[in-house]
Image (tube, rainbow over all chains, first blue to last red; front, top):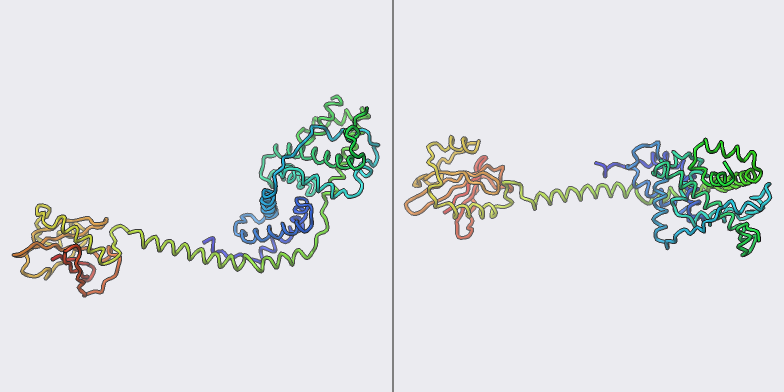
Length: 192
Length: 227
């Protein structure tokens, strides 16, 4: 009887603990704050332990844990006010045009880059966040991302493309906004 | 490929195939503006990847998770599992108690009510009853088991006949007797069809809707006599 199957704590630890660092870093990208990330990992591990008997394939433990963490994150996110992502339709490439080539990112984004990244990432819908995290942080292929988040590979590709655009634009916009205060013409890279 | 196609490709690289990448790179090789944009984009891409790198992981997380596991599911899971199993068993038991199994009776009074009713309905409709020469043979033919009624009911009674009646999906032998005063019904059924236990040899007396009943068990059979 399934309900009576004893949870093997030792086995659970053997399988899941090697992925704690991965979970923490995904949680950190989702939440943007260390303590929130730790809470998310705790909740994930608690759920994983109670559902351990549902893990069919031990080789897919990492993906299984990711799914649990993602679900927890989505559940928490739903409790917050839903704000639609607003895009002004401009291209992020516009922000690059007037910059000198070498070392432009360092000059433009400079310090607090992580904070900027978190702010921009947090402003995106989760459907863009997860592929971006798996792509950049885990260097996963489209196929691997598709399996992790359980969406078709074509959807992964288009979400990544859009996600990257939003992310790059957001980063450049924030940096330009700080550097060139309030001048929308300059921010857009247009010459008058 | 022109500059417009190039920028479109650059922004949507993930959705394009390799052949377009070749064309785009060829264009960039000959276009200084696009080459510059490509270089910046790659620089930005590398920068983002760098920011996505793993951050320092606090080793205390292991002990924190340890504590979470200690205080929760393992034991609770097992206890919960056992509780769930007991709940299921209790539900099954309740189901069987409240849901009558075909042909079973939960109590003596319930059995009494049904046989008393059947006696009232059919106990005087003589054409229903066939003559019985040999009760053992008749019961074997009609019920696939045989029983005896030796000494039952009293010797001064005469058997009118018998019929098979179905009460709550259970086949009873309904034998009709008469004496000089009245007609009496004797219902016979195997004890397996009774959902309660009776003390062997004891005669239970009860009155249901004005019908006096004597119910007893002998060997594998249960008997209910009106009158």
